[in-house]
Length: 453
Image (cartoon, rainbow, N blue to C red; front, side):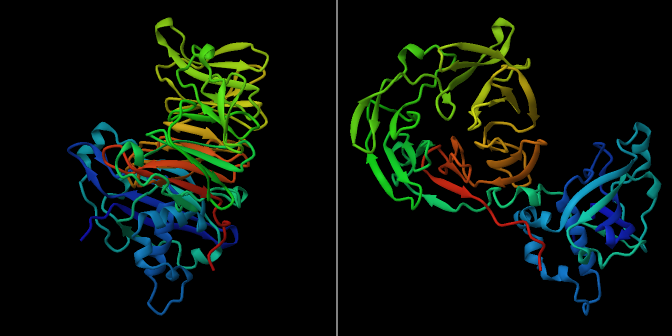
């Protein structure tokens, strides 16, 4: 038998407003360590509450939420992926007894149990009131003011996709295509490394840790070319702007390697080596008008910075907000007006004309790159999530909201790359425990946000 975590009471139901007001009591505490179940802050919790209310109805009830089965509601990933189809938004409108005062812990018990719709010492319990907005008035049919019950449900990390985000928002829970390009097992030969789309979106180039190059047609994912390692590239590759020519990507940072920038490339259309203009810096904008890489100069007192080289040859070192975190990623919008720089857990948005930081999106963490139209960020890395392991996030730039967090099942996610039109995201996924072996996944737009029938 599970221990109750929360108590629920229905305060008000307004079907015409697609709204219910609920009170949530925390009924599980550890008074010795002075901790308790967290205040719910995710739509997934309230979706589960609505489902429970429907299940509490007589068995003869034909409530539409009965279409959601027990197996589904007990699957955290299913709940995370579907909650936004039922619960549109939650708003906390009142908070009581939080945080618990020092003298309050002596009056609390570890466990509270529901008795006839009430809990002992309700006035002492941590509690909050919420307005819960739903997508359809049918989800509220089982609620009546005064209803109360206990629950073992808990908040998860649900997708929070809005109708305006579709149909172009990615479905990160299920790759459209999975490519096993390097079937060498848990070795350098069998491990994907870098990947990058050509500027016209016609090709995706991928390297292995053994520096083998595979170039794929993006219309059907057939191989256009497969070449063993070459002195023209290593694991890190780039396309020469506006061409089908592959060369090495400079990754040392700070513009210090500009004099050694590659000037030879492999033309995949002709199968020959060709001379190309110097290709400096780790990241470039769509046409190569801007090239940049970042670094950390903490010993100088300036902290992290990004060095931007323009096509005129002017180099500018732009200093980021102070902090000890290094620059982790640099990406550009296709209009070449904004640059997104990942520093620690933040992503700074820089105006390329003025060089100033125009916005900062916090809490993203790890490696993050902007979709070419500037609307969304994809991020990958470690993190504490309801699912654990390595995750992939999708964030909306306009308001800094995280739309979804999805467990990848991989051990490492070294590289992400957007297609030029933003319709696809390619990800290198390392699956072996020792950092070897893996696959390339292609994610594309998911289904429209529709109210379940």
